[in-house]
Length: 247
Image (cartoon, rainbow, N blue to C red; front, side, top):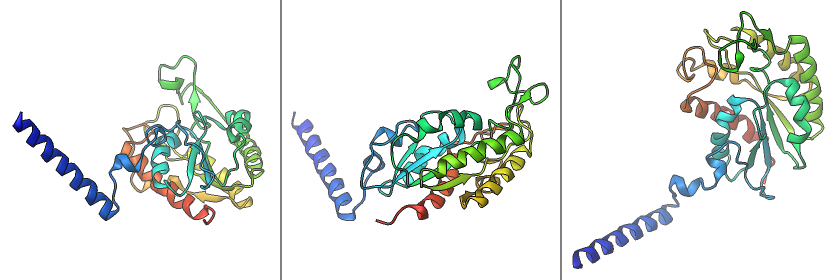
């Protein structure tokens, strides 16, 4: 009984010492820093804090992968929301953009469509998503893509938010549904539109290439490792932060 009491007393003293150390040095554990589902799940948007700017992320699974990391980097500086689904291809974005924008006032919007647009699919393909660049059909032609992105940019500009276009990340060799280099062609299309409309360009393509293939999941996969998404998130943060309204 006495041994148990001594152990409990020692444990209490250690805990108290740790708490005092944190308060004295103004430090906190990772759990204390990032409380809330939004720091664990991309689709768990934060509760709107009226004292913080609102940032909206629009994009496919690549943006889903870096959403939580961007929220952590911008904690206390902005509320970071994302659309409630995968943004897929540009025509899908046109169908849903009004719902995604909702009623919040957006200070910064970072957007991308591309990897789905350049994907070839065939209904009989056994690959994930029916991808098949040999026998499949292209989701969006360059002409259609330019038309769709022109309309999407027009709608996004109507929000009066500061806009950031994030370039589509690289297609690796061996990708069964996409052709290497197509992303560059489609990126050039939006790059011209972005410059014409004074939209900030976040060249995630070039940024990712600096560490490819180390940060992509496996050969032929357009997705990234956890470390890869953190690497992309730092670049997204770097571009968003200067555009936030001053306190």
